[in-house]
Length: 543
Image 1 (tube, rainbow, N blue to C red):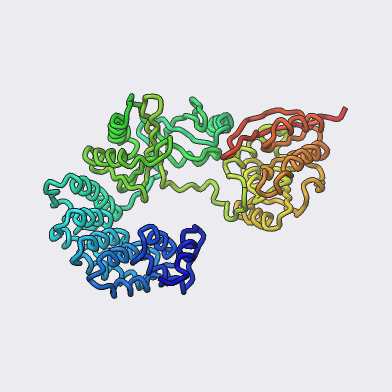
Image 2: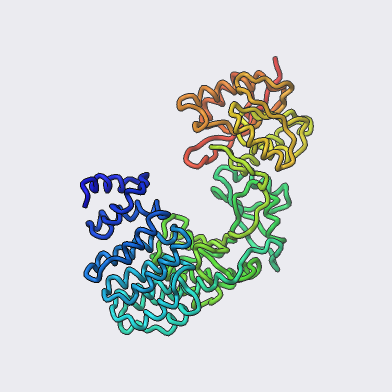
């Protein structure tokens, strides 16, 4: 080991370290002959330079002697980690070398070779694994081969796993059970799967529209305005009913997604929860939803409302659901549906969320800037501005902090206006706004200007999602916002509307009152980590 190796390994443990060309061989030395902790750190660093490390690792693996089984095992593990990121021409060589190691005299090497092959995806030598499984005598290596067969899939893998017997090994029985599920999942990916937005249910279905917490009232109003019944509301969601094509949800701009709720089931404890999820997922109620809107295979993933993976429960659910309904395939990476599970309060509530449904609502968003508005939030501001305007078609609308222009786009798409004006101090933001406006077919005049100094004439409506810390220096947000409230009071015509989001609502309410602005509406809103308030002011007539 070279004298500079310890310092190299110290750097390798740093998340931002990327090895140089001269670091590759010393790091491979650490993999093959160092302490396990050092080997793992070196592996992680080498993955960041898979383009050059792959060839060196393969050369080292080919040259390691039979008396260094531990080195071969570690190098096989390294090649498995590098191969998915390495050059295409070297992936085939990695597959060949790992396949040869399935016959290595060392069970340790055979095990690591099998696990590495499981990482290769389409490049994996499936037939070599299929031959290795019945010939493998070591219990640990046999489990690794079974696991790899499940990951790479294919007809040969499915056939071998289907005929395999655990032979009294309970751990192998568990591995085989999961491998059969994953192999079937991989094989099923050849069948297309998508959500049919033109499909409609035979009878109306309960549906939930999700939204940013704080927009429930506005979403309910928009649902009613666009012909949807608006039912019970809860934080971040509003209930409704779908009686026509699923694609009709795209007439509603404030929602962030929809779900079909299934009837809740009482359950306590992990075993009861898993059983309840299976019962709901395989119910006739769920089948009616899935069969109506899915074309091709029904692939789903499970998401827990409280967060976390809970892998043991997911496997239990996937296994039993597949037994009851063979057409249901648990596939987290290519799922068509998300099965969202909330098991709080002694009940299991399952909702089915369509995942592969084209959403054309915000296709105009071709450019972005840091801290730009979420388009559903921009749509909410536009709806408030139009709803409180005395004459929307006559409005001269100004966004003083226009960013990428989403508020202007949404205001222009919602209703005609006399003029749309946008300003910002940042040239790249104005360029992004122009591109988005053009993509949406909305005409607006953009100006590079300071919101506290710019004075566009005849403004009857101000609508904006102002900067809240990422686009201004720390400590200057509040003075900027309070200064602009005063500016709005001076510029707006009597009766004009000022609609925006304030992260310091109490201060901006007081500033508005001093500036001759009457607060007409206020909604607390979750901004994804901090609270703010959508405020709507009206310019009062001069006394």
